[in-house]
Every structure is written in structure tokens, then in C-alpha cells.
Length: 243
Image (cartoon, rainbow, N blue to C red; front, side, top):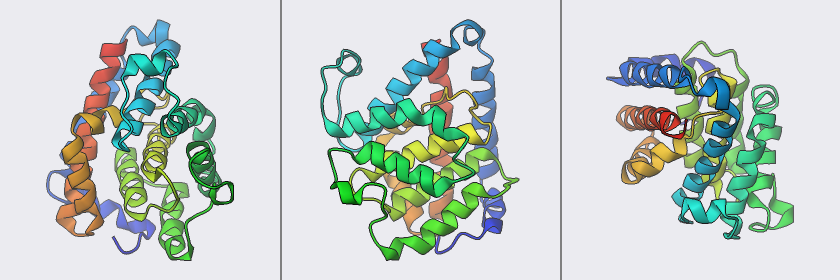
């Protein structure tokens, strides 16, 4: 997608199968969030989701570790540690995301990039070429969107994966921004979804759909949105498993 004026999102709902896929994913999320166990153990579930999302996001960057090894604190890989840092701070950034998305995105990169990229690059876009498209995206984040939050989250994810506006493991930045969007738009107000787990479960599709999105064609965008909807459905199922 060459540019992202605010009005560009609504027509995406007319792409074949997109609206039903998003509706099905949202229904799965709403049902999962009504799980009775969440009334008494929402906090522990959120902590476990945070851990699993970080482990899956690092794995999608090629840094794979067993969940139990990470839980035990034996993994010191800086990419994984960056994913864990940003997952821990996600709740605190959610309310700020629609208000000051540029600053929040910079903060995510600082958390992710520590010990990986040079200090002078932390929180700074890689160059002026990415700034116009990044500005368009951040305008969307802060706009009063009437489209489904899942659709906005998919576009945030796809754009940041395509643009890669920061040095280092920018895929982790993209996935963290996606989770923030789901929280901020009310899809997942308690931060109990780990879409990264769904993406990892369908990793070849994730990579293929991201590449398709980057082409900017309607079919490519459609494939990406449908993949994101599927990943979110899988993440909704994970809530029940954890709870």
C-alpha cells in the first residue's frame, strides 16, 4: 500500500472473505474472554500470555527457545530478553498508544533493541525514506477509526513488517504494536491475547502472507488480513488452554 489516508481502511472490508474472517475472529475472542476462570485468575493468565507472546515473537525472528527454559530464566539471548521486556511493559503503554504513537513506538524499539543495536539508533527510525509512510500509519493509529480494531491491528502489523522502520529485530516491534492496537481498540482490553502464538503455529503462512501484503495488491492485502484473523482465533483458543 503506497499511502495510508484514514479513509483507506473501510474499503478493505469489501475484499472477498475479509469481513467474515474478522467477524469470526472477534466472536472467538469475545467468547474466550468470557471464560469463567478469568474472573478469578485473570492476572496469572495475563502473565502467562505475556511470557508466551514474547517467546513466540522471538521465535518468529529466528531465536527459538523452549518455553520452560525461558520460564526458568536460563535463556540470556538479547533478542528474547528484548521481547520479554516489551511484553512486560505492554499494559503501561496501551493507553498512550493512540495518543502519542510515535513516542510509544520509539519506546518499544528501545526495549527491544537494547544490547542489540547501537545506543544512538535506539528509538530512531533507520532513515528519512521511511518517515512519510510511518507518519501515515501513526496517523491511522491516533485517528477515530470506525473500522474493526482487528482490521487496524492487521494493518499496523503489516505496515511495520513491510517498512521495518527500526534497526535490529523490527518484527518484534511490529508484533508488540499489534498487541497494543488490540488492547487500545477494545478487542483485548485486558491483554489476554497472544497473536504471536497463532502466527508461529502457522509460520510459513505468516511469512507468505506478509510478503503478499508487501506487494500492495488487493489479493496480497486480503491474504494478510485473513491470516491475521486466523492467528487471532488461534490465540483466543490459547486463552482457554491457559485458563
